[in-house]
Amino acid sequence: MTQGPVVLVTVTLPAGATLGDALRRYDLTPDQVDQEYGLVSVDPAQGLYALLVTADAAERITGTPGTPGAAGPYANPSIEPYGPPQPGPARGDDEG
Amino acid sequence: MRVMIQMRPAPDVVEAVIDPSVRTTAADVAGPIPGVALDPDYEPVPVPRPQPAAPGGDPLSLESMTFSMTPERATVLVRGEIQDYDVASRYAMLGLARPDIVAISSDPVIESMPTCGGDGPVGDWHDVQNKLTDHLKSEGMDGEGVALAILDTGINVAHVSEVLGQPVTVDESRSWKPSGVTGNFGQFPVDHGSMCAFDTRITAPRATLLDLPVLLSTKPVILGLLSDAVAAFAHLRNVLDAMPQEQRALVVSNSWGSFKPTWDFPPGHPGNYSDNPAHPFNLSVSALEQAGADILFAAGNCGRECPDGRCGFPDRPINGANSHPRVLSVGGVDTRGARVGYSSQGPGRLSRRKPDICTYTHFAGSKAFGPNEPDSGTSAATPVAAGVVAAIRSQLPVGELSPAEMRTLLRRTADDLGMAGYDFDYGYGTIDAAAIVEAVRRRRKNGRHH
Image 1 (tube, each protein chain N blue to C red):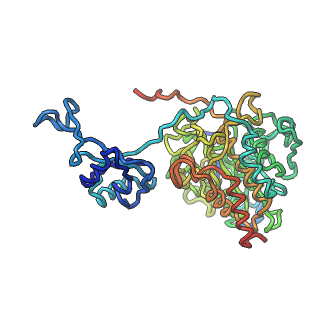
Image 2: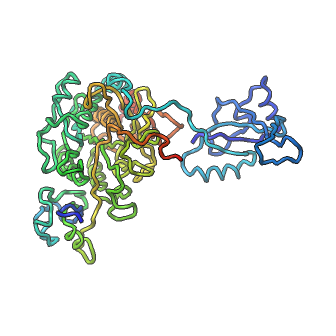
Image 3: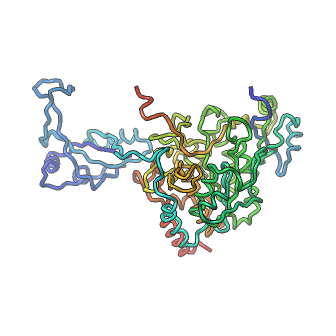
């Protein structure tokens, strides 16, 4: 099981919300949240924000019954440069 | 899709096709076939009918056969194109609509080996400049006043300036880096991000570069996380909001993506990224584009002919935001105009019609990977395209041309390569700067530029 606040979730808060607002609204403690990452605006028109939280916290706020406005967990895959192209299997390696 | 269509027209038509002294056309043989664009330049070819050598012989055996070219027994081959969409149904309907069609088969392109990873450069960045930049400059399109964000491994302006022969700077006040990333904007080690910065300067020499090193590692093993990109896009939203509404001009170049489905939830899971428009990053892409940003993503290097060894998707490798309907998804061609073999083919996962367009890659340019190594991958094509967009933007801010209209402009003016119309190799074709300039001139003449 991955440790630390690395699980990506979204929460809904009013415009201009702060990380403190998110902690209070979703009953989170500071150590359950990646505070350096903070509260990140995803879609201001929808009041949608992203947070990185611990697995336990994610399960509590997004599970059943959960906390209204919270969703996730979402995939947080590694991202890599698309270049330079690295060698792949030689053509025909997967044949016969 | 290119197809060969085998037909059995009336014997007198077959006789004319067989007779070398008579010139026949596809229209003579087939007439109009619904849904098929016949190739008028392909002279119909008579096809003899195989039959058993001896009366009563096995009609399905390939041994002891003879071939009959009598007009009553021979058939005729023509060729044409049908749309890529729903090919199986189209085949079936054609058979019903035209009983004289005997068989339809694909007519694949026969071509030499494409440019692949590891191959030397094909041309250099001056070739790209000649093909794109000179046309744009003639209309004053140089990127002046446009912010061009490079989300990558960070930019080294000293290296880019030296190779380019011109001073290059980044706007530190509007640049951004994930927490934990050390180093100063514009002074990161020479790597992929410097290549991208260099390649934007080919086509947008006066754009203002923003350095966003989201791919720099802050944790062991991995390069970057998608959540860093979510935060970078939130920052760019603030950059955009600080610009006057009608004068917004922000181009976002993304030469990265997710290679491995094992890092993702499976398609259908509500937390999935690759196929899910409701993933937070895909939503942040929509929100930034809605606010007026032009967003470009590389199509990826998982083309069937020579895929990158990291490619993990078994099919449809253009995934997540790289396939987002509100971005321009960019494939690669070499400076000869041929698709590079690693350029990912569609359909995309969020939006089928990906890639949107192609432009140049695999040319000698930034020397970021060594003096003889090309700027390669759809990684290089994307900043070239981003530079073109920034160049156009310098004359047409968002108040006059929305990001959606910008994408339409590039698609409609693209030089259609591959099959006629859209195809999953080249998208709508390669960026055609001369056609863009002509379209903008027409737009101005028609009073749509204020």
